[in-house]
Each structure stands twice: as C-alpha cells, then as structure tokens.
Amino acid sequence: MDMWWWNKQGEVVAFPKVSPEVRFTMQGKLKETAQKEKEKCTTSVTILDDDEEMEEAEMSIVKKGKRKSTSNMHPFFTKGINDPSQPTIKSAMQSKTKIHDVDLAIAMWFYDACIPMNACNSPFFQLMVDKITSIGYGYKAPNYHAMRVNLLIDAKKSVSLIIDSLRSQWVDTGCTIMSDEWRDVSQRHLINLLVYCPKGISFLKSVDASDMEINATNLCNLFAEIVEMAGEKNAVQMVTDNATNYKLVGTKLCESYPSITWSPCALHCLNLVLKDLSELNNVKSLVNLASRVTVFVYNHKWPLNWSRKTPGWKEFIRPGATRFGTVFIALQSLYDHKEDLQAMVISNEFKKMLKMGNAVECKQIVLNEIFWNSCFIIVKVMTPLLKLLRLCDSDEKPAIGYVYEGMRQARRGIKKLFKNKKELYRPYTNIIDSRWDRMLRKNIYCAAYWLNPVFQYDHANLCKKNEVFQGVIDMVEKTFKGDDMLNITLNLGRFRNAEGTFGGSSAVASRNLTRPDERWKLFDGDILVLQKLAIRILSQTTSSSGCERNWNVFERIRTKRKNRLDVHYNLRLQNRHVVEEEREGELNYDDLENMLDEQEHEPASKSQGDHVDHEVDSEFQLLSDREIDAYNTPISQDP
Image 1 (cartoon, rainbow, N blue to C red):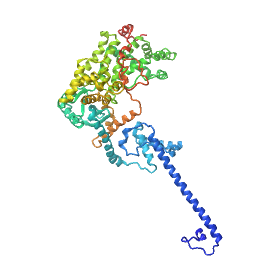
Image 2: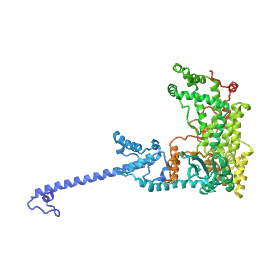
Image 3: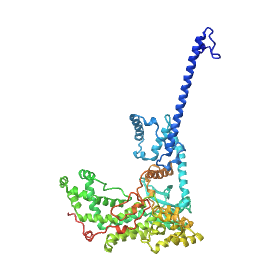
C-alpha cells in the first residue's frame, strides 16, 4: 500500500490521483523506515561480532591460564574438542533447581545400571560430561551396538597409541618384564604379564593357565614369547614370584637371553622378612597384647568415640602394602596414641566399663610401661623396613637404585638401636641377612647402588665391599660386548673420581636434586655407552606389585567371548597416573631420608632429590640401658 501511495516505479502500479504533497510525505516515511531497518541489522551484526570476539578472548585466556594438565587423555580425542574451556554464561547462571535436576538424572542412571559410586572418580567421567555439554542440546548417546563394537575398536586403537609411545621409551631406558600369578573367585589360574618403564606400565598379556601344567618348561616358553614381544634388546630385567619353579625359569631364561637379569619381587622378599620378624616370640606376644587393646576399643562404642575425638587421631588399623606391614603400622599407631589411651583408661567414664573382664585387661595393658617400651623398640626396628617396603611398592619412580642402601641402613640402625649388643640385635639382623642372601643379593642391585651418584660420591658411607664393584662388572659384561665393554670398563674410574663432566659444577650441584636415571640423561655424556648402561639399570623397578593393582578387572571382563582386557587394563594403568598427577604422591624418596628417626622432620622447601640423609645414624635415638634391660623383661599384664 505504501508503495502504491508512493508511486515507486517497478514495484507496483502507480496510483494516478495521488497529489504531490501526499507522495512527498510517503516517500519520507518509507526512507525513515528503511533507515531504521538498516540500523537494526547493523546493530545485530555488531553484537554477534562482539560475542565472537568475547568467545575468542575467553579461549585465549584459557590457553594462557595455568591449569593442571592431564596429558594422558589427549590421545583419545580429536584436537579442539579436548581443549579445556571455561563454563558458558548460560551454564554458570543456571538455578540450583536445574543443576539439581541434572545431578539427579546422572545419579538415577548410576542407580538403575548398578554402577559403583567410585566410577565418579574416573578422570574420564568429568571429561565425558564436558564433551556432552560442548555439543549442546539434541545430542544422542551411542547405542548398545556402537559401545560394544565400533567405539570399542576405536578405544583399542587409542590405547594402542599410548602403548606405542611407551614402547618408544624402552629403547633408551630399557624395561622390566613383570609377572604375577593368582587365582580368582572362580579358581581360574591366571598369569598377568606387564612391562614397566619409568614413563608407565603397559599390559601385554594374560594367560589362563587353569589347564596348563605350571612347570619350568611351560613357563619358560611363555616368558620367551613375552621377551620377543617386548624386544630382547629392550628387556633389562624380569621380576617374578620367588617360587622354586620361577627360580628355575629365571635361570633358563638368562641362559637363552644372556643380557636379561632375573630378580624375585623385592616387595615379596620384604614381606617375608616382616613375616619372619613377626614370628619371633617377643614380637608375637607383643602383637597379641596390642590386638587385645585394639579389639576392645573397636568393639565398644564409648572408647571408640572417645578416641576419635582426640586431636590428631589416626585409626589403629590402617591398610599397609602387605598383610604383615599392616600389623606393624597398627603397632606404630597404637604407640602414637599412648598418652590418649592412658588418659582414657583412668578417666571416670571408663570406670563404668570395668565390670567387663576385657576392660580390666585392657587397662592393665595400657598402663604397663614395659608393654609400651617393647612397642617403641619394635616400631623403631620395623620403621626402616616399612619405608623400604613402601619404596619398593611404588612404581611411580624407579626404586632399584635405593634397595641396597635401604637394607644397609636398616641393619645399621638396628645395631645402633641396641648399642651393638649382639645378643639383642642378631635375632633381627639374621632374619634380614637370610632373606637378602637367598633372594635379593643380585648383581643388578649392586650395580644400581654403585652407579647412583647420591651414594657414589658420599665417600664416608659408600660400601666398599667387593660384591658391589663386581656387580657392576658383571652387568657390563651382560649388557655389552667387544669395544663397548672395554670402553666402559676403562672409564668407570672417571665416574668414581668425578672427572670431566662427572665433576662439573652443575653436575655436582644436581647430584641430590634429581632422580639418578634423570641425572645420567642430563650429564655424564662423555662416555655414551656408560651413560646408556647407567640409564638402563637405574630406570628399572624392583617388584611386580604393578601386576596386582587391577585384579578386579579380571573378575568382570575376562571371558572368552568378550576379551578386550588390554583396553580396560591399560586404561586403568593410565588413569592411575592421571590421578596421581593431581595429588601429592604417596611416596617420595625423602621417605628414606629419616628412615631411622622416630619422627619425620622434612622442611617444606626440601627438594625431591634429597633422597637419603647419610647422617641419619648419628641422629638415631639410642635406647638407654634401662630400656634395654626392660626389653629383656617378659611383659606382664599387671600395671
């Protein structure tokens, strides 16, 4: 109609009777309307551009920000989608009701599918939620077939990329083949085979040996297959159980592959040491009395509540790396709460419980100073062994360079504790020596000790036994031949005397600041073959405990029809390292530093590499003559 009144050419037929005044007025209104529409469109485009600039600015801020990186995740997802981003304004301003509805929907899915609650702790859980929200409304979850077939195949490919990245490390650092056999709830005899390197553990194979005769020949064939999978030139060590058949397998395998060393699991060895110590008469009676106290406290409501309200309370029963480690941890915890327990049994409230026979017995034990003195001594004896146990149980960092010195410090500490009185310390040191000589006195441990700069240049405490240097020579002869072997042998003295780059200012300053295998990568490159030998030895683990961490995976997955065990197991191994990156590690080499002290006193600024305090023996709190005499006195339950 406006065009008709305006009489605009080409749009509509002109109205012949419109006066010039009306036509002029209509032209003005149409121009004004067109201008407003143009301005509106321009504003809309400007706002859109501003939003895009804001989004780009937010992305740049996120990229520049310092966020904890979970580098283990990126191989699974395409670039861009995996980049961390800040929540949108819309999601940040949602009401609590809507957020609760979303949380409830997730929870209902967990409940309906009977998914364990700890699945929320998976690093993939929040990542999954972020991926879904990044796509927005309308996303349809994958169906049963996609999860079971297509996506599983893609996940296997992604896991294979991670394993390939670990394989590339084996060439430089070498690797340890780990084995562990066990029986599940269905009494299947399973053998797990994994490979360790400092960058991570990878699962290679699991064998159902239920219908196989477990003899040396069959096991040797199995391990030969694994050596070929890992690469003979890459494998440095094989760690297995200490059973007789595995000893024979180790001997045969070393004959077939001369460059590989067989060692029993150090964690198993230390566990047997603790087992033998716990069977000593004085230790057995002490543990029996301590268990009566803990059983009474945990079986009665008032003592347990009273104890848990005390400042700095720690549970008496806490899980340890092994069964026998848990026993001695309980003794340590009980001794730490000595004053609290004594205050409890003499309180007025406790008098009401004295009608119970076990309450009287508990009071007598808690007020018996001989009991506490014996507790103190056993705790002091076990502390270095427990810390060495924790060190060997951790596959976060290579521990092989510290086992030899750890055992030496344990023996020295026990001797000093009893003021070198043989009749008192020999029951303990004889057990340690027996297990060490039969199981862990291996050339690779001696070589790792000698090549560790932390100990090599501590001349006051360096062990100068012939077995140590002979272990180095044997490992050189096993690893290299010809000119390389001769080159290393002739230049070992340069490392011992800190000549050339071995004695440079930066090399000296970093001796106690970095892991020994990492330090050899940074320095000591004058003799490349010696550097290669040191890195390959110091980069190995000492136990096969990594095989045991995911036994529950086999309970749910290992069937003949649906065996994607390599995907699930390797994901578990990778996820464990992701979680460890986000929290402080359970074990630091500083734990060896005061291994013979009653309490740990670590400054906040202590560096990671201050591994061992070599003055620890002089700081060790010795027993008084009165305490030693009391130790020889049988424990009575009378206060």
